[in-house]
Length: 169
Image (cartoon, rainbow, N blue to C red):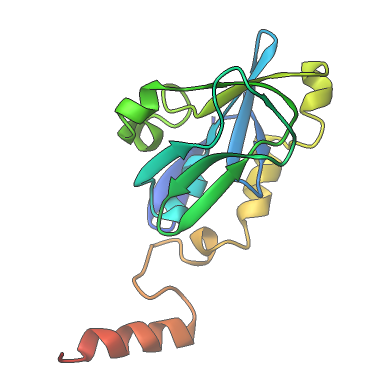
């Protein structure tokens, strides 16, 4: 297990037994003939958590690479795309308990699984390992603001945040 001790004021895990798609903030793990996907802890911290999830496809449906699978409300509105083509199976348990995505993102908080049309190894060809994923995060706000300071780390952000905080409305 790889850890980032200070990432936007939190310690986050990046399991070494998974592959990563940094653009979407997805982890992937091969299980039998399927690939299971979920959101990484660093992504969840940067996104401000998950407030709501909704499915854009149905279990058993054939999905295409790049197709939106999930609509998520975090600190903003996101569409989570699948990184590969295949038959999808959704984790219906997280619809009942969406907190699992935040509290157990690498196990029970998985989002969907795909049975790819190609071999699992080939399907994961565009993914990266845990250490390359951490390297991709180096330029993110999580590393730039390791203590999670309000207002961020740039002078402009701090000035705006301080100015708003001092206003009397």
